[in-house]
Length: 420
Ligand SMILES: [Zn+2]
Ligand SMILES: [Zn+2]
Image (cartoon, rainbow, N blue to C red; front, side, top):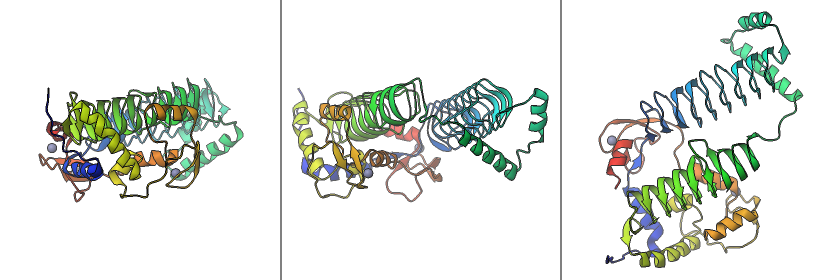
């Protein structure tokens, strides 16, 4: 039987949490299981990639963002499984394609939009299983090769003319109302292999969830709301950004492999944490503000702290980190029709969402979905890179933290070594 003398005061929780964060190092750049990917951030299982962000399983990728399984690609965004591609957006399983968008399973298809399973096409829109088409016109192999040969890729004005022709072609073709594939009962855009998703964007392999954004890495999300960017392998989670493999967690930023954790940042491989920062391997016992407390104290204090958060207008993890307190407390209305406290636009709660929130004992949102999403996105630095030293080992770091920023910034190895 442990005997803990509990010094935690709910009244000072917000300031105590912020003090903890100020003392804790932040990770200068995150490259997990990756090699030679120093210039960039949030890279997993990747190799020899430069200036890539939020991407995984990449090799020889340059300036690629929010993409996965990219090999020898450059300047691609929201792509998956591409090789030798350049300047592509939302393409998947393409090979040797340039300046194309929304194409899948294409080969050597340039300046094209919405094409599937095409080969050797150029400037074409919405074609299926075609070869040797130029601006949707079927040509012979010889004619196609001759015209392609005459096309000067190096000339900006010739490229612009090709784009303009494609834009005109796009207007002639009916456009699909949403980008979805292999889904059941989903709303949003760019949602794939998913089921019962409410207003999700750039999301794959996700089920029974709402307001999930940028779920592009290994796994999606189940029974979760307001998660992302980069939610990977989450179950029963709420208000979580930049995190992976979580079960029943709420209000987290930059965390991984957690169970039953709330209001934390920089915590890994742990369980039953509340308001903790920079902890790893704390999967035994109960912790508040990095201090071990008895289960009894934990259960007594958590509802009191949550009351304090609510009374100070702390509604999400961004608020806990950044919001000026005390803020004017807002009476918690139980109306489905609401007005965002931040941008004052109207928004509506849906039944599944309310059911989830009540089951998870969460305050109904005070901010509209786009404001909630930008709060989570804005927890991270902008994608500007600086050269600075790791505050621990003095190794040179390429990081989104400028040299003169507040607090400690460590390289991935020092960060993971020092965290305990
Ligand atoms: Zn809003
Ligand atoms: Zn270091």
